[in-house]
Length: 492
Ligand code: GLU
Image 1 (cartoon, rainbow, N blue to C red):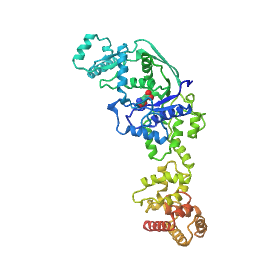
Image 2 (cartoon, helix red, strand yellow):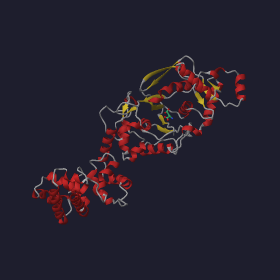
Image 3 (cartoon, rainbow, N blue to C red):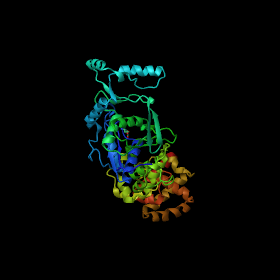
């Protein structure tokens, strides 16, 4: 069970080595929900000690993703705080001091092995089918040997002196008791030769100095935790509580990856998913209120979140469910809110030939017609595109889909055109004119309306016909009917 006797201080500690994906942000969200539930602090710490793997733009993408989802941090970049700096690259002296102490107290040692030697050693281990890991050659160097290596100008790394036989035990709030055998842990590096700490060292030092109470992080870090426990022990720090979050899987139960279409969180934003839907969806990736409730507001999530209800087994990421949920949230918006959100998507995504700026008044009329059917804002643009383009692209055969002959279709369109020239362009009037006209032409309403639908929208499925025509307006409708007639004539 989670122990919250200490003030709750949790952190999201991303490395800016890539654009944050769904899994990273789920970790951030769980930490944030836990902090907000307990009235604690949510800290953002940037673990940027791997200069080789640093990716340009990654930090911005991390901050943008958190901001977009409303995961505000109490301490960290931009916010400041009493435990900074919050970029590990600005804390090198702290780590160096800790490492010196570990060396002095005999818990760490300098290692002069070259990359070539380590490479050789690795190959040899593979050949002999031995477990991988440093062979501890430098663990027992004499002062004289050290001085000789030093004289050669080799800059050493610092390694932890892992106890040779011991069991490491810790409790994970989600998994219960976890036991690791020290024999499986090598003398891992604490400080690289460039003076930068490794993840293990910096993570432990900072979690301690920043008074982190609970570490909620991805499952993949579970195997690092025994190393961290060893470090906490050696440094005389009290370890935080750990909770390793279940892995996120694709619908085929393989670890979620690009292959599943799951991309960066910002890509979801670009496609027009709403942050409130995304938060709701991500919260259910491994956590549940009662195995049934799907729709929950941010406030409800905060109120109910607990580590106890995080599952042990992998959480399935279903793109379909996300689409459904986003559709639900889109339908909850007022017309005005949806117009506001749709405008930039239309501006950006409608074909180039459509004149800009897009008329907001026109959009306000369109939105109620597509709100029910869209799952994302990008999809909304696709559904609405026919309202804007000059020329509809459709196969003339589509006009005859309902089994009409070209001749009858032509006649029907021609008559419709005549009537539409004078009839008021409102849904009710249009229906009042067109419904009886079907009978007059000897057509089934389905046939006639289907024909008009393709002629005016280019699609066989579109929003309600008369409302759509009313929004399109007389001029556009007449022009489109004429074009349809031309296409039928050409086809014949
Ligand atoms: N920097 C690590 C990461 O990128 C942090 C892991 C942890 O939370 O301890 O995920």
